[in-house]
Image (cartoon, rainbow, N blue to C red):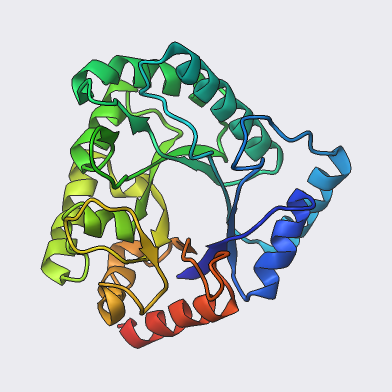
Length: 282
């Protein structure tokens, strides 16, 4: 399993790969624009070329994460269109840097119900998928949180997958914390086996392209999306059950933990995850 982390691209996209190496990670996830604004970043061609050259040298998996502002299910037309445009821009940049995928949260139907939102989400994803390519997929992430959040169940992700005709460039990223707080006890091997079997049946295990590995501050089934550092949360040592599943072995495991200073994964978190993998290796 390749140990990766979400790293900052502040100062230029290529700086993300420098930071990845500094903390000892083997894969990277990054934002391709500021996560706090809708305004896209105008990346210099030389920055993109440096990124591609270094990434090729390292042979490291790289993923872009879409803005958390995005809501493809919103009934607000302004927010809906802005979300689609931003996602298309993110996908364009991800293709330019030859990323392996764009990971995103579908959003919230804001109380209108999943069925009422499916058509809007499907239309949005069709438009975004037009910007993908053979290498750079669109990856739905399972969600946490209460209310109208879409993607808390595999059935909801599978419904979107089917509505999009099982698109050849549409995949999935599973988040350990989100699964746990949504009621899947991924620290129990039989429950995890059931999850993997359900994913394979509904969508196909070959569509699973990446993992987000985070401990949880909140209890099982709480629907509270609060990431915790490896070994410090509710799953603790038994997060190793999730990491050691045979179906996940070849996947990049991307940390999104707070780190020691609250600014994201650091070298200590990378080493903690690596050690946890070693202890649970069969």
